Length: 446
Image (cartoon, rainbow, N blue to C red; front, side, top):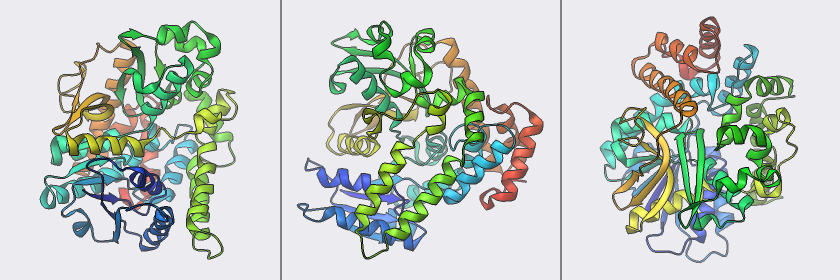
């Protein structure tokens, strides 16, 4: 099986390759092509991957290219993880929003809208090339904002594009751990949009274990989401929210913490990754060792501002483990390639799953996956507190997609003004002006 990784010079690519090296199962990936627009980053990451492959039995063959058409042709699976305007763009997203007193996180609020507006046109072009050159390929999208981008690509690829995210996986694993339950034996009732979802149940042998969690303060605050949201709010909801909902439920506190921080998350990662790519070229150290150190630092500082706002302290060792998006991608590919049925939480088109949203809206829910791809499983109706927020954010997503397709500044302003975390039409207009002045990827908006 042949896998192409778009954004192949990205920092997290070695996680995917490590999972492939460990895979000895049927339908395994035997050839990996890395595609990126930056030859220097491609060279650095390919060095890390070759270091990883030392001593491995029969590692996947590795190729690199800056030619998109050559990369996608003949692929069985295409993994998308690109960042339009790089981390410089993310840093600008955050800074410009915070200067206006609103959240600038890369997938949530004003920053997510800016990121989506400059990413959707690029990903739509990529989707059209894939449809023309590799119509039978399955596309696994990890490009953020993942739900919005997957929905835009689905207009060209239909159900052959699937969005993945490690946040629901990590949440489910942490809650299962707090309950002393094997995550592999549990069925998760999770519903929402990407970075906007709720764990409503965790069933083992048909019995929901979540009520046990709410009865015990020690269990309820023993993992990251419990400490972020607090036991009282989790009991109020009767569910455990995805960590990104902290930006919505405690927006004033998170904005204040972000404004008080020495630098934004994007600025930190920009500085850190520049250092990594420079150190990785130093002959005195292996590229893999430099990558490992940088990855650990990245993990321990994840959502630091939210933990500061919630007085949640440092991340525990159980919280440091990746949600496992690379293993999720591997399981997804194997289920499709071998017709091995798996149940995975994925970003897919709604169909008739949630009555509050349109059939072609991309949602994040458990899906049954086989050779025909994923199918969302039936789920209970969404409670009002969740339905209202989902509908509001999905309307913003759709305005972003239409603005990207038409180049409409008016729709871009409407997307910004309509988001729950942007509190003023005047602010929305100033935000867009600031983003257009700083980010070349938004010059198309008129």
